[in-house]
Length: 115
Length: 115
Image 1 (cartoon, chains in turn yellow, orange):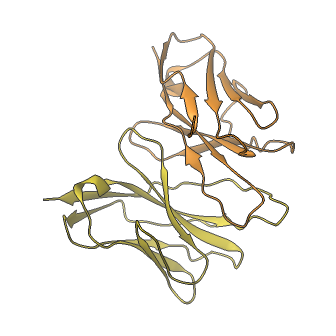
Image 2 (cartoon, helix red, strand yellow):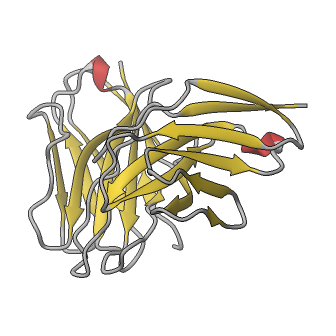
C-alpha cells in the first residue's frame, strides 16, 4: 500500500471548516483513499473514502486532486467533538472475490478544535 | 453485540508471564485485523485473517506473538514471556468482504501494562 504524508498537528476554531491535507504521491490506479479518525481512548472510526471523484457524506467531504497524488479531508463546521487524530490511508481495492488487504496507518494529524 | 468486542479492557501482568487477548468480531465479518498502539503513537499492524486463507503475519514483531482465529469467529492474540515494551493498547478490527469497499470497525482495545 502507498505511503501517505500528513502534517503532525493542526488547530481549528470551532464552527470553522477544518481542512486536513494528505499526500500520497505513489498511489496506484487501484488504490482507494480512506480517512479514519481516532478520538482519545477509542478505536479508530471510519469517516469517508474515495477513488478519484470528490465524495461527501454526513461527516465530511473528500477532495482528491486530478492526478490523485494528494487529497484533503474537509470537516465543514468543526466542533470540539471533532478533536482527534485523523489518519489518511491508501488501500488496494478488494477484488470481486473479496480479497482483503491490510490498512496501514501512519502517524496521522492531530486536530485540535478550540473555542 | 452490534460492534467489535475486545476483552479484557485492561490487563496488568508481570514481566515474563503470558497473556491472551480476545476479539469478538461483528457477525459475518470475514476479515479480522490486530493492531498495536503504543502511548502517543500511531497504529502498528500486527496480523490479519481473511476467511480460510492463510493469515498475513508480516507485522508480528517477534515469535513471542501469535494469533489464532477459528473460522469467522473469535480471535485470540497471545503474547508469551511479556516484556515491558509490549505495554500498549491492542486493537482489533473486523470487516466484511465480497464488495469493493467496506469499512473496518474497531473495538475499544485492550490496554496491556507489563510491570
